[in-house]
Image (cartoon, rainbow, N blue to C red; front, side, top):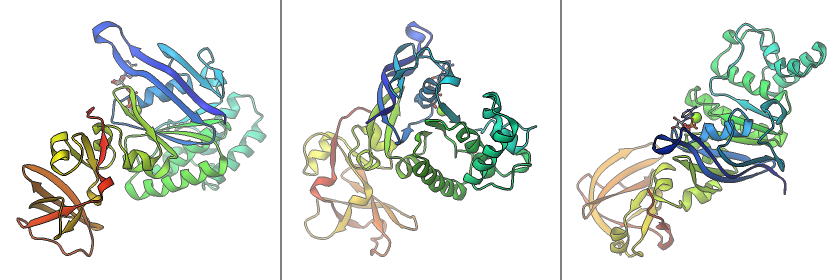
Length: 334
Ligand code: ADP
Ligand code: MG
């Protein structure tokens, strides 16, 4: 297996001493060739800095970065075979769409006829074959997004970096573009490094997800691993909503005295032999189901009850149960 991107104990600190900002702090990472890799984390957790370290617009203060086995510490951005799609697209407003897409080839000295032919090919790839002569200002947000993608792909990068590329789109369009990007990645086989703060987006698109917190990676795994077996309280909280049980409550509910994560959809209502009893303090209809808040001796458990289940009234006593392995033990690190 070839690694497309490797981080070996990489840090990027700004300033020194007690005021230093540890934007990236001791990150180890291996992204195999052809993977759709997501970097997920709250704002300020170091995702963009990691992308800039890969593209070469930023240099590490410690550690080493390899791209396809080569230490790129001294390799300038234009020689890295890596391209970036930015959240704001960064298109040139005065140039036609075709010239925008062909720009990277112009910089490389490709003749006009060849580069425009290649640009048209890329515009077809992103389903905008007839838009070449327009200006970016004459396109919708979703269309501009595709142009930005075509402009990056025209360089045939071995790694494509995408920094919150769908952040500016409304929900429907964002979902459509998620499918499209995923299909495109599969078809082209290019390694994608996709940055997002949206956990649903990361889980639905990526082969593997790295969860970032304060410049560090707290967990790397498949979407299923991250969701079903969060390593820490932070991951359980940030990725989906979860019931985070402190050790005393875990013990009271029949598990070991450790921190545990219990997903709302794992909890069922029951009359016989419940693991917990409590009073319903809130019901919220969500379409796919109903979110029940239940006060279990001073702590609130949230259960997601599927549509079609008979619902208790607010204030009613209910019994709750879940499969023995549904409460996942984890580290208490917040
Ligand atoms: P994210 O993309 O996850 O939102 P960033 O990588 O942009 O996070 O930033 C991580 C941290 O590094 C933030 O606290 C940010 O303010 C800080 N940071 C980023 N770039 C610089 C810079 N050039 N100078 C000082 N601090 C920076
Ligand atoms: Mg960012």
